[in-house]
Amino acid sequence: MSFQAYLDNIQAKTGRTPDDFRRIAAEKGFTVGGVLRKDLKAGVVLAWLAEDYDLGRGHGMAIVALLKGDKKVGDA
Image 1 (cartoon, helix red, strand yellow):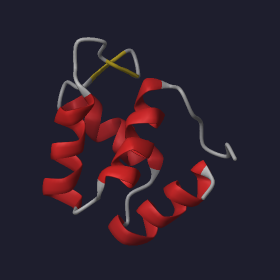
Image 2 (cartoon, helix red, strand yellow):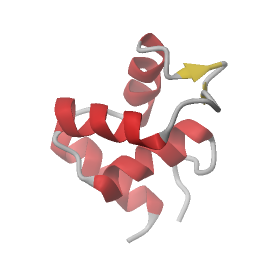
Image 3 (cartoon, helix red, strand yellow):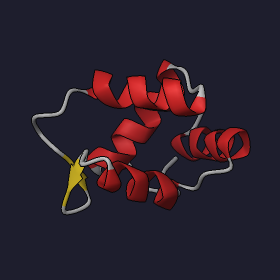
Image 4 (cartoon, one colour):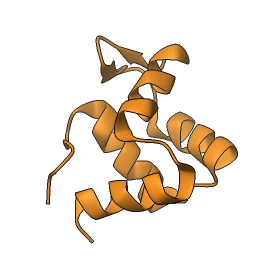
């Protein structure tokens, strides 16, 4: 599955866009300057996504990659 397909599936399931997740992560203090804090473990983000959005590890890691800046919307 492509990265974009993960994001599309996440949006279909949660009703949240990648920009929504970026905004919420910033509000939670998970990001600094739009990028995931280096001292924050992925497990913290995965736990948040599982609790609030019922996302599994694969979809959660797509959001982690998005927040890290490793992947961008539209990536294959």
